[in-house]
Length: 176
Image (cartoon, rainbow, N blue to C red; front, side, top):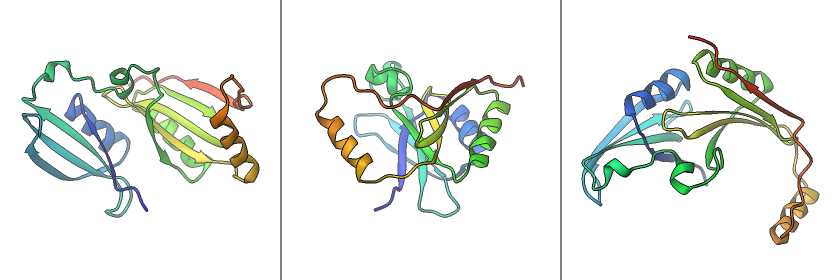
């Protein structure tokens, strides 16, 4: 089974478009304009993530909905969770790819948080709605031991931390 699309509401669709098309390099390919079940209407914009039409990220621009002034677009704020808890991650294939994305984000005026989790390496920033976006490179392998540890953790009620990250670094945005 594959992933088709992730759909999120956008606080500012023009800023969202600039981020996902100009910075992320995703191509806007489709819009659906439709009524919303709870009232009002919306434009549902689809961005192609890969080179084919099998994987997308989509954003809702909502209009005239009941309570629209109260909408919270940052997933973590909406759920009253710590920042970066809810996030979405895109795959990269090499350390060079990860570094290229870090530099691209910095040049776009975005701060970047980098962490080597010992089994994957990640960089994070936020989109115009405040949602955490990640690029991730799997750098480790999984075996019966890693699965057994994951299953043990299901039952644990006391803090039993994983080994500390191999690297944590905050990169500043480059001035425009």
